[in-house]
Amino acid sequence: MVAKCNSGEEWIYEAGSDVSYKEYQTKGYELQGAYSKLKTRKQEHAMREELLPAVLSGLADMRDRLPEILEQKPWISEDEGKDLADKISEMRSWLEDKIKE
Image 1 (tube, rainbow, N blue to C red):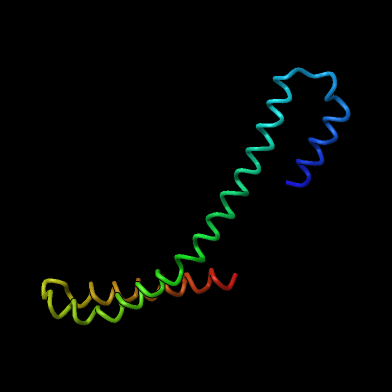
Image 2 (spheres, helix red, strand yellow; image 1 turned 180 degrees about the vertical axis):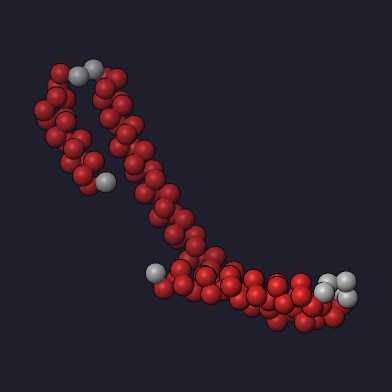
């Protein structure tokens, strides 16, 4: 992003006085597009930090309630229950790995 800003600054000083309003507008849109992507990533990162405890808590709750659910719903096979437990564990491990990165 810094390189784009520097490039835009150089463009303004070199060719800026000889270009039309449309060209200024196009350059502005280019910079705003790059900035918008970064701004969105920052917002998503902040949202992840807020939501992560709730997601981890939900996974733990699901894992803890799984035996009760399997007992109450006999049509769910043991293999399906084990598959769900594995998926919960896999999801938790994946999230924890992403947190470390």
